[in-house]
Length: 320
Length: 216
Image (cartoon, rainbow over all chains, first blue to last red; front, side):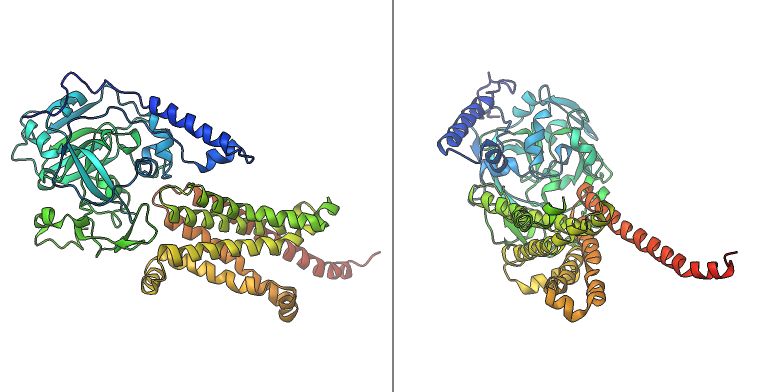
């Protein structure tokens, strides 16, 4: 197996983002000074988006993926300051402010259940499972907004093959990290934690299903699900669970957080589908961040060629 | 205090204070401060300010009575009209920026989605109140009828809170906060009305009492 990265570098060799940040803060301060802002710095700070971005390592030797879209990518600023990560607050701007409390050092993911070789894997090991690819995916939130993100990762199936699922495995259950001490805002979220999600085994093994470790050429910022997350581009964003700590292969359909919170609004499958409305809003259109007018939402978010066959004969209005 | 409340300048100052939220929004728009989803930001901001101004308007009567400051009445119409102005901006944002005059989609939204239905209802309830807010209309309708009509603000405020509550996905802290404020302000009115009625009943009873017990 080809590994396209310097093997002497480990996940812990983090180039502190603060180096970038200091530079930006300095430039920002210069801007204020030169604008001779009479209104004062306070107003400026209120209006200007904060710079709390906590990404780490730059990845090198990342392979381009044929699954990538050629659509215009959203800005790093948008993707890191408009997040749903309810453990860190329910406002879109909350995770950027609060997610720095998440401790990602010595991260461990437990892969267990109906597998021949259950194991706990470190981030260093995860990064060596398969060559890292850049995959530019459309990401459609159930709230009718969308973004285009250059993720870094590899097909989840690579990890699955490593642990060898047994014939009993029909589904895969995922679980996010949950630590009240680091996630002070979680108690107001109105949903239960730890956040859990699930996929059918064939969905998990679909080559589009990505185990994501980075975006925009570097490791994931905390608010985007550091250090490792799922990315399932044909399903609504909440299926793409963040900050993974547990992956369990099992015979039973696993529970999913939003489905538990409101099963009439969020189904287990939650495939992007313009023909099945959310009870409280239409799913026919979406607003791409950075654009004012809405665009039409595509069936399976435009990934029908790769995934539609998995749902042949299924009533997608019933299994939403 | 009385001089301050009746001063022409106080009214001017309050007027400009009420414009600050709008000014801040415009300022943000020109300084890249509306975030990644500007339309959503404008909708949320104008919606919240509508609720706030409804609450301010509903505060006037209880504060007048509890603080014995009858002159506060001078600000009620202005605050009410600002609530209406912000709800107009809120609705226009939906009409233009969110749906871009797609009237089929808007009609479907209003008919199918309870949170939009109730929000639109609240907006409609405020419309006649804004129109009849002038001195001329008070005269034409007569004080009693005008007052009856303008109790519509109670239902508009309730509709606003429900609209907000049904909109959020799971974190209901803010809707509950506004709901509590509106609840307290409406309960106070209910209590006030109840006590007034009792004391009025007491007042009509007392002559009979005195008749039954003639002074000796």
